[in-house]
Every structure is written in C-alpha cells, then in structure tokens.
Length: 213
Image (cartoon, rainbow, N blue to C red; front, side):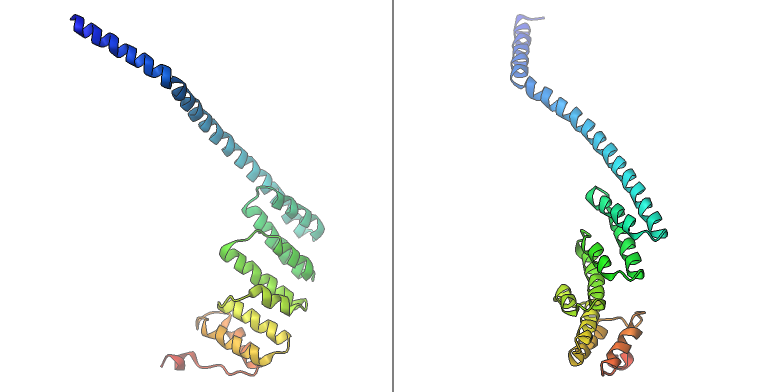
C-alpha cells in the first residue's frame, strides 16, 4: 500500500471521527427517539384497547339498566361514558337512553341527554332535529324554531312547519310544508305524512307527475 493511500485513509478516518464527535449525539438522540416512538405507539395502542374494553363494559351496563327500566342508573353509566374516551359507545348509549326516556314520557330528560352529545356535522343536524321535535312536544315551539335556524332540508322545514302549527300560524306553516314537499323525493316513505300535514294546514297537494309535465 502506498504512503499516499495510507495518508488518505488516515485523513478519512480523522474526518469520520470528527463528524461523529459533532453529530454522534444527534444520531444517538434520533435512535432513542425512534425507539421511544415505537414504544410510545405500542403503549398508546394498549391504552386505546383498554379504554375501548372499559367503554364496552359500561355500554353493556347501560343496556342492562335500560332493559330493566332503570333509567337513572343508565343515565349515570352514560355520564361515565361521556367523561371518558368512549367514542361511538357514548353516542350509542346516549341515543338509546334518550329513546327510553321518550318512551317513558320523560321528554325533558331526553332533551338533556341529546344535548349533552358532542355531535358534529350531519350527526349534529340529526340530533338537533330530534331535540327540536321534543321541544315542540314540550310546548317550546319558539326554541325549536331557533334550534333549526336556517336549515332548509326537507326534514328541518317539516319541523319548522310543525312548530308554526303549534304556534297557530297556519298560513306560515302551509308555506313551509309546501317547501318541504318540494325537496322530498316522490318515493320517500315520509311523503304521505307530510302531505297530510299540508292538507291539515289548509293547503293542497300537487300531483308530482303533473309537476314534471
């Protein structure tokens, strides 16, 4: 091996050692962080599995309480679900509890249960509609109208019409029911009921086939 080659190798070795001294700590930290991330991910997964298992147990407890008509016990279990990381379990339990409360004639309790749901997007719109219907049934038509706001889908318009009927505003209700029908598919199962509401409000139902001609 030539002297020049030895010097080149020595120089290269020195450069490597110098680079490691400058960057070694960073590399080691990166490795540690990488290993830590993997361990953290595994821990997080175990935590999630554990929380879901606990949520499932509480959800089953809600179901048992509802089957036994113990609504107060079910409400406590639902509250415990909502305070944790229960996800869909909390939503399902709340909906089941609200349904049982309505069937038991406890509409005010059902309203509280539904309003406690942390709903978003389309799910929130459906919850708001259900709450609005219950508000009308409990004599709070004005609150129902405020809750529906400016939503102009068929279901929301129908609810607004129901609230106006409750306020004895038949002319306004008739107009809103007509708008709701116009947005509803001809084959929709709820169309017949909406047509009946419109006629009860003094309106007339147009023939969908004739409208297309």
